[in-house]
Amino acid sequence: MAKFLFVHGAFQGAWVWREVSDILQSMGHETHIPTLSGCGYLHHGGREGIDLNTFIQDISNYIYFEELDDVVLVGHSYSGLICGAIMMGTPHLLHQAILVDTIIPQSNRSFVDTAGEAFRHMLESHRVGNWKIKPWPLNVFGVPESRGPWFSARLCDFPESAFLTPFPSEFDPTCVPVSFITCTATASPFIRAMAGKARSFGWSVTELNSGHCPMVTHPQELAAMLDTAVIAQAGSAA
Image (cartoon, rainbow, N blue to C red; front, side, top):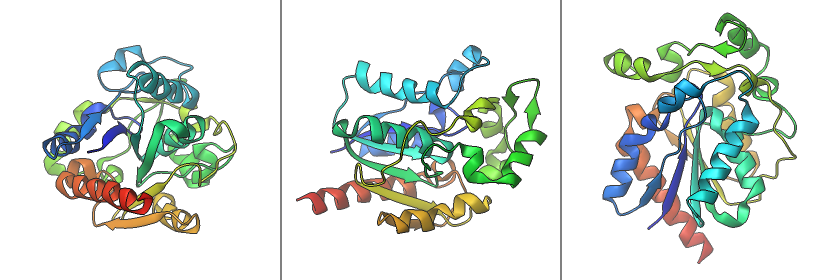
């Protein structure tokens, strides 16, 4: 059985992975769901100066202090940058990485650099005060109105600097085995385009007919895909 470590995306928290985690635990897997600084139940600690490097340290520290190895690292959306840095920094502690509708790092480029001008304008329109970005509308997350109140109530403002911090190194897409799950109904064109980049790297790419947050809308299907990706990697390594 696998040892999963889930990393949530912008504005969210560990709570977003709870259903998928419960399903995988019922299948016999071990799961870990850290929360990033200033997010989820740690939202009271949000402050100016938190950025991508802070989040990378959050996950690095979690792996170290929980004494994890042979980890299946699972990222979603923004956290593709975080996972990319963990892949580069501690490949010896990872069994594989599974990226779910994430941004794929580009060497020394920020989220905004990769996403382009349309996203830069979106940031400007969602700025709150001097350093925070308020959450996107529900349709961007792909969450239906029926779950909207529950989902929206748990979202937190996110530091703008996290979108502006360059990826801290050169990115090597071969440093660990990677699978990519692309959500075909995702609203963001640049996130949809990441599937093509994943294929260009030779990564395994699987399509899921969902919006951007399948852990909320399709937890059973996503959990099954994660389980299958682990089995496939074990088979290829044998």
